[in-house]
Length: 380
Ligand code: GLV
Picture 1 (spheres, rainbow, N blue to C red):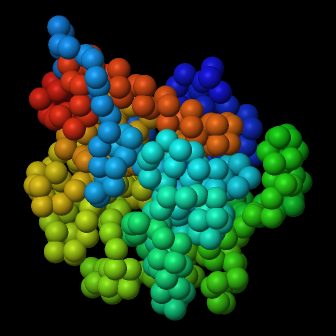
Picture 2 (picture 1 turned 30 degrees about the horizontal axis):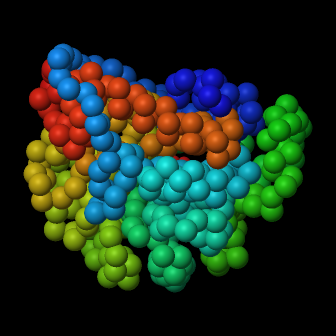
């Protein structure tokens, strides 16, 4: 793993180790993938302000996200099918995050269940909630996250219906995979992945199977979301979700100043500026381009985080300079996981930490908490 120097190196390794349908599930956006690309491209447009002859000793990346101490302000984002990038993927990633001192967020659409992740971790992790039409099931999910000691609920707002990702349809994505010649070939050409997968019983959606009633076609994400997700989710629902949960609440998927202002009255502790990694509304603005305006809209009345397009510690730094108190990475840790399990996730975090640290120093800063727009040259 030490030879992987960038997140792109981990991505190359993951491509060689993970069956195509799962690798491409991570490496895809909706329709033209324009927003998926813009999330990354717009980070490159932000220019850093180089400073010299500044004491660079005793640097610190430590910070807080929603009041929790973090070794750097980078959380692992909730991602579906994580246990299909590598056997027991969510459990391994949660352990890597815990050892590194950053938050791990378990997705509702995970392969390992809330209880599985709880059984291999000792510090609280975060749980991401999708709201289904079956409210009893949602209540049950919230209660299970509470029982597992999760310290934050991340409520996703931008996926009441699923954006179309052409690759998933072409690949016939499902968990467990179907045994058609195409799928068998994809797996046969990834023997290490298969060997690991044979060693686990976790091969479908662990939070759902055995817990949700009347789920007819779980394996296909599109049919399952269209049958089960609640298309009527509204601001009013936040209230009962917040009351039932009773702990820290993060709203994920805010990309508009007006929505950001509306979230101020929701009682949430933080919002995540996000377009779901370009996987939902293709043609929407990139996350980083919306961040400064959203930070200005909410001022210091609420913590603002960002996800989408982060591929380096430099991207993390740019988001922090624009006022994000935390960032969330999805694909970078998935590529690490696919490339090498827990060691690969650790490597992804190490790469980002080093890039963040060196960049901060060369910008003339020693404490990640002091980063601000003064460290950048241009406004987007
Ligand atoms: C689910 O959250 C997805 O984006 O596939």
